[in-house]
Figure (cartoon, rainbow, N blue to C red):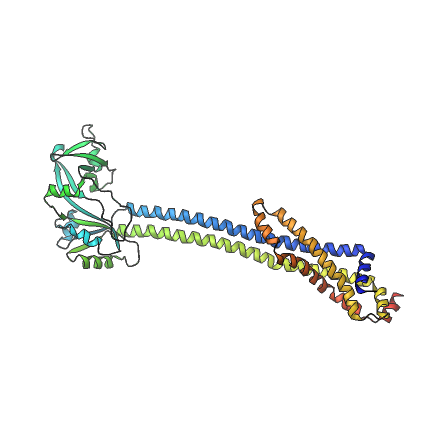
Length: 430
């Protein structure tokens, strides 16, 4: 009788034992396929979710950084370029500039290629009286709006004052008597000239509250300083090489007849705001990445001990079933050895049955595992799951892997049965 027929007849003779073996293998394969598939789907879902969160975080952080940038801009200009002839002690004591310089200095800075300062604003400022308001003391300021530096493209900190219009400080439009109150769009007279009010500034608690802003050219005409300016206001760049000594050196190389004053509190506050935004962005992105790594590590740690334990347990169980089968067939094996079956054929007889148990159990377990994984996964994850379970490596691994493990698990009982002396076996069986 051929070996194949012997295996077939053994399966028919002990159908229940064969079924138990197949179901045992199927259960183990189903759990392995389901768990590995679900964990991979979970990993893909986690990666996708965290990628979405990272994109969302980047958008939020960009908004936050822009907010901090705007907060820094609200601190206004933090650098002041003055004529080298200006007495700084006098300026710091009185707050007024007494020495002017050519307006061409602004273009010299603009086209110099300097990248440590931004938002150049030429200004002229004088004490004046407003005769139409009872000789009210005011500060007359002229501004043409900012001159964008050559590497710029940034939005201005201060909008220009158009010719024929005026911008009023808080105390100049908000007087208590109704006749003195002014609104945007009103026409006022200043030193005999009419101007339309283009803006009424809110209270600032500084000299700006009593300042009247005109177009730079018109202000120069009032004070008899055509083609001259008092100062150039600028904003320090928050970049490498933008420390105050370096800025002074660069500006004075371009404009030798000037000096630079830094409003250090504004510089430091603006830098701190930008640094806070950058640090917040980096820490949030690092936190998101750490979450991804932690979830991945948790999954890997779980599968690292559970799946090997499950496979070892399955091998032990299959080995016990094989040992029980060998014991039940002691007499049959003894007769086969007595009629000339060598130990190699006995090995093939026992292990062939286990190989079939592994193949059939692997196929059934693969189908059950795919079904379980589909049940555990959400509807939107079926595409990922389908791609995973239909991989050739998963199908072949389920069937051939189960067969190989079943054969390995049955090796000890097979060796025990094949190496026993047939005379001893028959004597014991009788």
